[in-house]
Length: 161
Ligand code: FES
Ligand code: FES
Image (cartoon, rainbow, N blue to C red):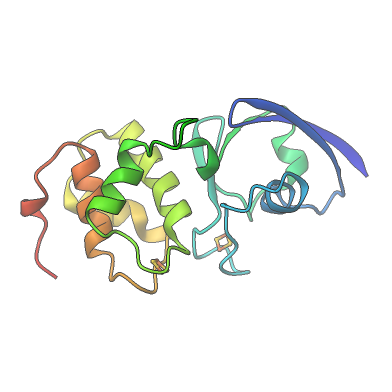
Protein backbone atom coordinates (compact mmCIF):
# COMPACT_ATOMS: atom_id res chain seq x y z
CA UNK A 1 0.00 0.00 0.00
CA UNK A 2 1.14 3.51 -0.79
CA UNK A 3 -0.05 6.74 0.74
CA UNK A 4 -1.72 9.27 -1.57
CA UNK A 5 -2.63 12.84 -0.72
CA UNK A 6 -4.78 15.14 -2.78
CA UNK A 7 -7.26 17.95 -2.49
CA UNK A 8 -10.85 16.87 -3.12
CA UNK A 9 -13.54 19.53 -3.30
CA UNK A 10 -11.23 21.93 -1.51
CA UNK A 11 -10.32 19.59 1.37
CA UNK A 12 -6.99 17.88 1.88
CA UNK A 13 -7.44 14.12 1.98
CA UNK A 14 -5.14 11.14 2.14
CA UNK A 15 -5.35 7.39 2.14
CA UNK A 16 -3.49 4.18 1.47
CA UNK A 17 -3.99 2.64 -1.95
CA UNK A 18 -2.70 -0.27 -3.96
CA UNK A 19 -0.88 0.36 -7.19
CA UNK A 20 -3.92 -0.87 -9.09
CA UNK A 21 -6.48 1.26 -7.21
CA UNK A 22 -8.38 3.47 -9.61
CA UNK A 23 -9.15 7.07 -8.77
CA UNK A 24 -12.87 6.28 -8.85
CA UNK A 25 -12.35 3.49 -6.31
CA UNK A 26 -10.41 5.80 -4.03
CA UNK A 27 -13.12 8.47 -4.26
CA UNK A 28 -16.00 6.05 -3.68
CA UNK A 29 -14.56 3.43 -1.36
CA UNK A 30 -11.77 5.40 0.28
CA UNK A 31 -13.52 8.73 0.75
CA UNK A 32 -17.19 7.70 0.59
CA UNK A 33 -17.86 10.11 -2.28
CA UNK A 34 -20.32 7.83 -4.02
CA UNK A 35 -21.78 10.51 -6.29
CA UNK A 36 -19.14 9.56 -8.82
CA UNK A 37 -20.61 6.49 -10.48
CA UNK A 38 -19.23 3.42 -12.23
CA UNK A 39 -21.41 2.48 -15.17
CA UNK A 40 -19.12 0.31 -17.27
CA UNK A 41 -15.80 -1.46 -17.29
CA UNK A 42 -14.83 -0.29 -20.75
CA UNK A 43 -14.18 3.45 -20.17
CA UNK A 44 -17.16 4.32 -22.34
CA UNK A 45 -20.02 5.59 -20.16
CA UNK A 46 -18.66 8.75 -18.55
CA UNK A 47 -20.61 8.24 -15.30
CA UNK A 48 -17.28 8.55 -13.48
CA UNK A 49 -16.19 11.96 -14.82
CA UNK A 50 -14.48 14.22 -12.28
CA UNK A 51 -12.12 17.14 -12.73
CA UNK A 52 -8.42 16.66 -12.04
CA UNK A 53 -6.51 19.92 -11.99
CA UNK A 54 -9.43 21.52 -13.81
CA UNK A 55 -9.63 18.97 -16.60
CA UNK A 56 -12.50 16.50 -17.07
CA UNK A 57 -11.22 12.97 -16.58
CA UNK A 58 -12.89 9.58 -16.55
CA UNK A 59 -11.84 8.56 -13.07
CA UNK A 60 -12.03 4.87 -14.00
CA UNK A 61 -9.15 5.44 -16.39
CA UNK A 62 -6.76 6.97 -13.87
CA UNK A 63 -4.91 5.37 -11.01
CA UNK A 64 -5.31 6.96 -7.61
CA UNK A 65 -1.52 7.19 -7.45
CA UNK A 66 -1.54 9.28 -10.64
CA UNK A 67 -3.74 11.82 -8.85
CA UNK A 68 -1.29 12.17 -5.95
CA UNK A 69 -0.97 15.88 -5.20
CA UNK A 70 -3.77 16.83 -7.60
CA UNK A 71 -6.73 19.12 -7.13
CA UNK A 72 -9.83 16.99 -7.71
CA UNK A 73 -13.46 18.12 -7.98
CA UNK A 74 -16.40 15.74 -7.82
CA UNK A 75 -20.15 16.15 -8.07
CA UNK A 76 -20.29 16.51 -4.28
CA UNK A 77 -18.39 19.77 -4.58
CA UNK A 78 -20.69 21.37 -7.13
CA UNK A 79 -23.56 22.59 -4.95
CA UNK A 80 -23.03 25.34 -2.37
CA UNK A 81 -22.48 24.23 1.24
CA UNK A 82 -26.13 25.03 2.02
CA UNK A 83 -27.22 22.68 -0.76
CA UNK A 84 -28.05 25.34 -3.33
CA UNK A 85 -27.51 23.75 -6.73
CA UNK A 86 -25.03 25.32 -9.08
CA UNK A 87 -26.29 26.77 -12.35
CA UNK A 88 -25.73 23.55 -14.30
CA UNK A 89 -27.40 21.33 -11.71
CA UNK A 90 -30.34 23.72 -11.50
CA UNK A 91 -30.67 23.75 -15.28
CA UNK A 92 -30.74 19.93 -15.35
CA UNK A 93 -33.56 20.05 -12.82
CA UNK A 94 -35.46 22.83 -14.61
CA UNK A 95 -35.22 21.19 -18.03
CA UNK A 96 -35.70 17.56 -16.92
CA UNK A 97 -32.19 16.65 -17.99
CA UNK A 98 -32.34 13.43 -16.00
CA UNK A 99 -34.55 10.46 -15.40
CA UNK A 100 -32.88 7.72 -13.36
CA UNK A 101 -30.00 10.07 -12.57
CA UNK A 102 -27.26 7.48 -12.93
CA UNK A 103 -25.42 9.37 -15.66
CA UNK A 104 -26.12 12.79 -14.17
CA UNK A 105 -22.99 13.32 -12.05
CA UNK A 106 -20.79 12.62 -15.05
CA UNK A 107 -22.98 14.74 -17.32
CA UNK A 108 -22.84 17.69 -14.92
CA UNK A 109 -19.07 17.41 -14.54
CA UNK A 110 -18.58 17.15 -18.31
CA UNK A 111 -20.91 20.09 -18.87
CA UNK A 112 -18.96 22.16 -16.36
CA UNK A 113 -15.71 21.38 -18.18
CA UNK A 114 -17.28 22.27 -21.52
CA UNK A 115 -18.68 25.59 -20.30
CA UNK A 116 -15.37 26.51 -18.71
CA UNK A 117 -13.64 26.20 -22.09
CA UNK A 118 -16.57 27.26 -24.26
CA UNK A 119 -19.07 29.42 -22.35
CA UNK A 120 -21.55 29.64 -25.25
CA UNK A 121 -21.41 26.30 -27.06
CA UNK A 122 -23.67 25.53 -29.99
CA UNK A 123 -26.02 22.59 -29.82
CA UNK A 124 -23.68 20.66 -32.12
CA UNK A 125 -20.71 21.45 -29.89
CA UNK A 126 -22.60 20.23 -26.83
CA UNK A 127 -23.62 17.00 -28.54
CA UNK A 128 -20.06 16.44 -29.74
CA UNK A 129 -18.59 17.12 -26.30
CA UNK A 130 -20.97 14.64 -24.67
CA UNK A 131 -19.95 11.79 -26.94
CA UNK A 132 -18.05 10.28 -24.01
CA UNK A 133 -21.09 10.32 -21.73
CA UNK A 134 -23.81 7.71 -22.19
CA UNK A 135 -27.38 8.17 -20.98
CA UNK A 136 -29.79 5.28 -21.44
CA UNK A 137 -32.89 7.21 -20.35
CA UNK A 138 -33.27 10.72 -21.71
CA UNK A 139 -32.37 10.53 -25.37
CA UNK A 140 -29.99 13.43 -24.57
CA UNK A 141 -32.42 16.10 -25.77
CA UNK A 142 -33.18 17.61 -22.38
CA UNK A 143 -29.55 17.31 -21.33
CA UNK A 144 -28.57 19.45 -24.30
CA UNK A 145 -31.34 21.89 -23.44
CA UNK A 146 -30.15 22.09 -19.84
CA UNK A 147 -26.60 22.86 -20.90
CA UNK A 148 -27.83 25.50 -23.34
CA UNK A 149 -29.84 27.06 -20.52
CA UNK A 150 -26.91 26.90 -18.10
CA UNK A 151 -24.86 28.81 -20.64
CA UNK A 152 -27.52 31.53 -20.74
CA UNK A 153 -28.70 30.65 -24.24
CA UNK A 154 -32.20 30.24 -25.58
CA UNK A 155 -33.26 26.60 -25.31
CA UNK A 156 -35.94 27.18 -27.92
CA UNK A 157 -33.19 26.95 -30.50
CA UNK A 158 -32.47 23.31 -29.59
CA UNK A 159 -33.68 21.10 -32.41
CA UNK A 160 -36.80 19.10 -31.71
CA UNK A 161 -36.29 15.43 -30.83
S1 FES B 1 -17.18 3.98 -15.33
FE1 FES B 1 -15.74 5.30 -16.24
S2 FES B 1 -16.33 5.45 -18.30
FE2 FES B 1 -17.79 4.07 -17.43
S1 FES C 1 -30.86 9.65 -16.70
FE1 FES C 1 -30.73 7.46 -16.59
S2 FES C 1 -28.84 7.03 -17.56
FE2 FES C 1 -29.11 9.16 -17.89
